[in-house]
Length: 116
Image 1 (cartoon, one colour):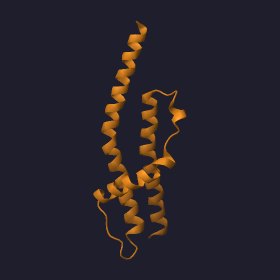
Image 2 (image 1 turned 30 degrees about the horizontal axis):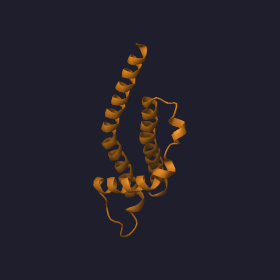
Image 3 (image 1 turned 120 degrees about the vertical axis):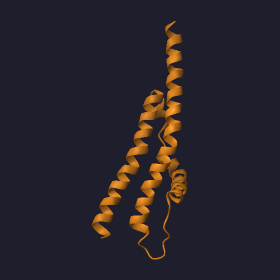
Image 4 (image 1 turned 90 degrees about the vertical axis):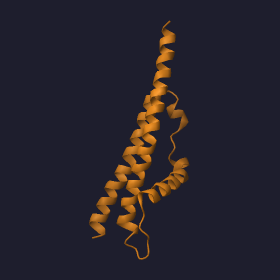
């Protein structure tokens, strides 16, 4: 009887992880595009002839860079073998939020110190 409740808890946890991931995907795309837009405007736009980009442009470019870098940045499958779906989701969310935030922070520092 305890295995049935454990199985149903795992199914419920998997469904919740799926729903959270579905909600976070567009938010992640927007956040990456926003960071790319800021970095582009701070560092590339001042160069003669560089075009201004919109959030939509940056979302597309971010997707391209994400696809190119996916193999380099993907997590090792063996690391996730013993983790629950919520732990894997937590690590993914941390990566989605922290990496662009750190890039944005250092980009802001660089443009404040070197571009003015």
